[in-house]
Image (cartoon, rainbow, N blue to C red):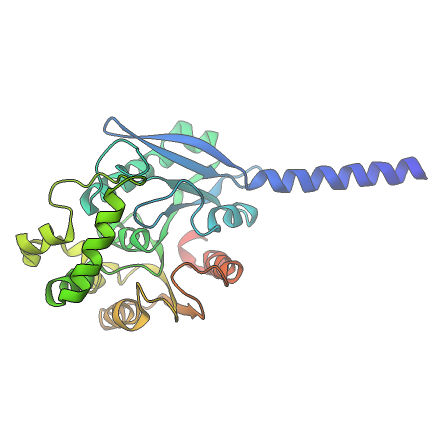
Length: 293
């Protein structure tokens, strides 16, 4: 009887060990036209293939998970791929919104490549895009220009069209943003900005030249047919619900969107108090949307 009990305990501990392994990320290298983006793949356990989420960091990117969501997605049966945007954390490349779009394309191509899809058990026909802050905005922008992306989510995603209009009209806001960019481009972050990527340079060049995919309200008609999840924080003072999240939702409504979910948490920009609920919201949305069924 004791030996049988020990066997059951051993099996239980082994299963716990395996479940922990599901969320342990694999290091991957993504080739973006010769610039190597360092990524992490949180792999779901099992035979697969699995719906895979390309999960985008905020600016100026990060070396770890995105708000802890990647690991939670893997535990729930989804793959999640994250990567560092170029020019951040002493990585090669230069940072800009246009470059970020090319990097997302490189990640999309990487995960759908036949040998990688087989190796990482990826359902190449069901790729979902999502992100936080800068990453949320870039996810929506990429989805606006790519019919193959049918589902996208944004967590406190910035609307760079509105962000740049505020920069142009509000000297106090301009001073704050200039200070943030100065801190990001200085050590230890040492972000390398591409020429013309600083908000001041974009505004001076003329907002009429801004690619519409970065102005989320303007791109709403191109997103209206997709399944979208928008999440905000009521106490977020950086990407506020009233200036950025809700107006984008209203623009989607006006454009005829029928599959948009919007929700908010009593938390700030970093969702440290409500991280578990945040991850569960994303997972539940993924399980319910038609685009991946």
